Image (tube, rainbow, N blue to C red; front, side):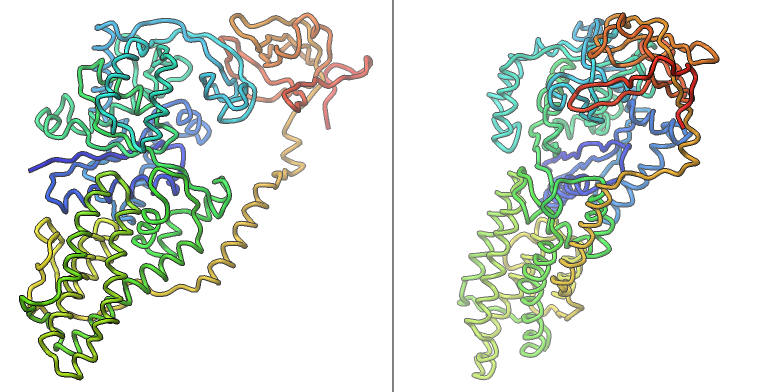
Length: 631
């Protein structure tokens, strides 16, 4: 039996499941279900990425451990996948003990081999986020991609992976495997990036503790991307179940979002080459969704919350829309009106109405029994269905979900036309029983095949449809052929598969919600006078100032705050020289919780105004007393 191994990325647990998560996972599920339908032994892996600084910080803010935070979020993903009928075989968490052992084992081996070495990491550092970024990740060339604030250049000890030594090997691998990255234009982007030259990459951190420890150096934790990527091998039995690993590896398909393509198409195969493991066969990077013509935002996410979509339209209708509306690999716009139109047009009118008409005629003209076809019947629908089977297979092999669905709908439209042309009601009146039986069989078998090929996309609704056609078993490879429907099978009409929706009412409702979401984004959060009174902001005088070593922007200040002296680390070195600050009076937030920055305990914060990447410290009259409080 042939095997097929498909994965989603593992989702970061600092967020609730959203439309992007659902899109990727549904796509992987469709492929997994289709391959099972075709007789493959399938392994489908999904899961969560649970280490890193953001998780550590978010958990600290909630007063819980990082693992407790991860545990609470994982439940949301599992519940959503259950509602979407996601047929994964294993759900991996990067906090699973077997995964951590695999990551440490590979890290140790690559270190001993010389592909990992200790060096000094120099990069762009965001003090508020406590995160390093590469130059290419910065927004506007100088700001943190997470919080939008200015970054500075810093250094710290780090373990590096010798990515630079794998440049030629990667280019040769791409040349030998032109379909490794899909769509094709993404492969061109990857090759162009590698040809520009690869630098060694930092794969450890010392600025936080929530991660897998470097096995031979407890001061460092393994960088979250090195950790996370190896889920694809640890989750399939690497070093724990070698028989399973050898059966399913290399992965046949990693489905990811385009924002993480570089990690999967460059770093991942290089890591595997270093470890002596064959790279995966394909990485498919899909596009992003906008919402109602607008860029996705936190406020707008509620408009397309996956759980809400299931409640409103049903899981299968949402699955169908996401796979049909946009060519996989390109960006698309999610619109409730477009979804409702697809449900009413494609699902209710084209498919649902065809099923209803054919079942009604079978019950009326054939006593609800599948008639026996004759050898000399017309082959119009049979030939179209055979072509449909070939087309669906060809398109899904390229992850062209919308093209596969369109090929099925060509047959559905042809079958609706066939009903009108053959006019079974006239054949019945004219007592042409043999021809009538042939027409009904052709239509019933077409509907069965359509339901079988749509099963990976809409498993629950297609189970219902097959049941109405008298087929009670889950489709298997033997069902992907013409002529399987057994004459004499009893059919039965059921409830409409896809009830019609009021498109106009939906459009009005969503338009109102989008406007409310936009207003919410424009709001500046109001605080009470009681909240403001908790902030102790005083006038302080700078007594000493010096740059923090190996930084461009950090300045260490010693302040007279009236009752005592305080030390503060401020990111103002790009706008002010230390000697110019001595003697200045500044605004100082006295009761901010202290924290260490570059080894210096910063007690509070000085306040400044900013605009257009310029910083302005407030000016005070000479006679303003030190310690005076802002009220």
